[in-house]
Length: 326
Image 1: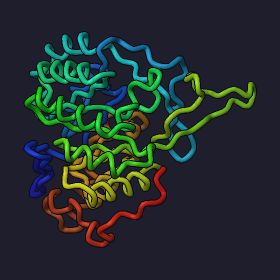
Image 2: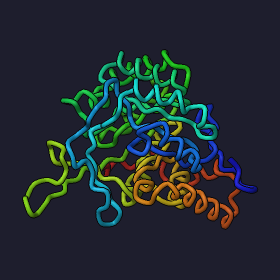
Image 3: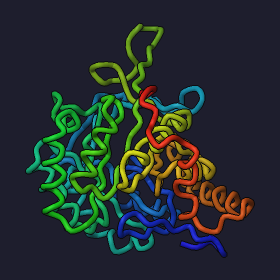
Image 4: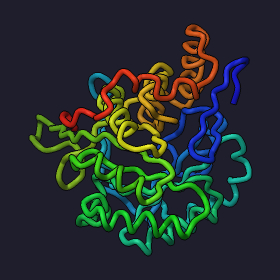
């Protein structure tokens, strides 16, 4: 995509995306129609809610606290979705009308065979990219979904097997909470991931002082904090991953403005997945962020988004500082 003389396109492997502002997997992509709305609003790529083989109700309500001080949101959804079969049927009616944005289908399975089946169905419904969610922190199903990052040999087998069975790019969403993020991303690179989406995770607990009980309905009472204050931790995560592997990185976490997008690009990301800011500000915020980004590019004489990628890394040591992972 070009805005006047500005070139906003980004290249992620073989994909050329019209701009680096993406709808992240989550509730705003629960249906193909909702994905289309964000594509029409201007997102360079739009992602589905993470899909599973069977429909999931997720955790009991309340699943989220939308507005906390400083813009935080606390959620423990537990992966509710309509299931890949129903989603695929709806996508077949909608896919041809999503023309200018790349379509990302996010999937989560319990076994390698299930992941292969989900990825194949995602490709068949018209996905441009498959987002393999190996990280969902509050949909553990007794540990099954979040176990992939704990066994790097199993993780390697998962990625290589899925890659053999699809023809489109495979992006992997991984979680920093295990404290071995840089080992995980090295494994993903060795296995042939086409892009890495490192998720910076901070857990949280909200308490109802009237009852003394946790506010969220998840059985453990805790959730994941998202929102603008997460940006600085996410920037560190992106810069660390970009200095560790050569695989393209797509950022996520805390991005809420056009300036934030530019900061993530300068830290090495080739795109930024956003959802909390869109939940809080509405779909028109896509246009606002694009406008903010282009205004800053014009003000600073930057003509191409590609020229911003990794600009800050030369000011950082080659080896990431190991401490302070959330």
